[in-house]
Length: 409
Image 1 (tube, rainbow, N blue to C red):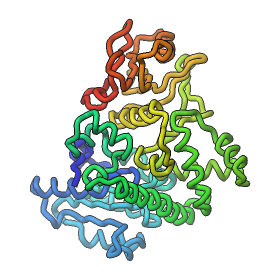
Image 2: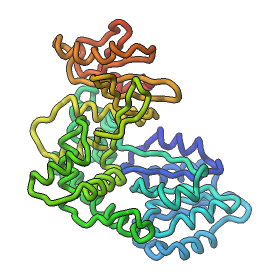
Image 3: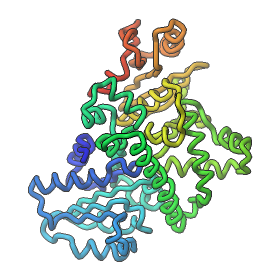
Image 4: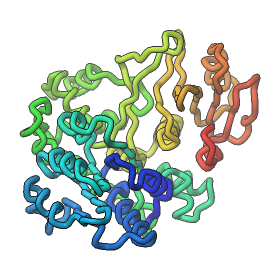
């Protein structure tokens, strides 16, 4: 069992605070395990078993509790009268109208509520309206590279090669690895995410008319494959639609938009908006889409050769999210900065490239950063170990060293 220390720390920080703790993330990234580990922490810190109510809605024994009235009654009967009750509701999106249960439990004194979900829309619509200002979201991701190395005991260089190939799903890091076993496991995750998300979305559709039904699994997988092939490149709904039409699929832009939304809601892909550095405003057109795990990408898009730079860029994007940055793609005049990362009121500009040793690449990556005249930190992350240093205030850092560091920059 992989211990996710950083996420445990976040739950511990919010313990007993009068907010609902919502853990979100792709299936199999470790949400259920995190709740189990946190419950162990509670027991070790003196909380009694009777004070903990834990329900995983993917377990058959709790199937009848997907009726929200039965669920509420079940929990209500088990609340402690004189001590605090810790309530854990895992994959809560399987319960239609669950927001009514959560809101009612929140209103009761002496409850501390933790819920998880594998769909981003669980924090939209009715629940978001009910819980405005009353919840904190903890977005969970697969293992970071640092966590991966700690679990596997591999050297940094060997570990990075495996991490690029196999990704960071927690079980992948601890299983007895063969390419066939890993491929089969990742195939299971991918198909589970696609199919179960469809089930949950269809169920939610009954209560949220704004959610269009997703009925064509083949189309959904075709769009996922296209997005996997364009990591690091600007993508629009129109460009995806044009690709599908050119491949013989008759599909509208509205349908493509809905299916892309479904992939984002399932936390398979993360769309990132562009940011005009001069105008200080977001640009809605041509987002970039990053895939939550490179192992899943290798399953969806099996190829012998990848653009190494874009794969590293994918890893860097999610590491910035783990470090609590708000991340956008930077546009500065006619040039682009890979990432504009904001933490509170501070910005950091990042360029990401596989290799900086050629003069043309060096100049290409440095030019956008040189043109930006503000005083925020500017960093180039590269896989090579020959160019790191400080060049007129622009830092060049080896990306493996950066991933293994504990500080933000």
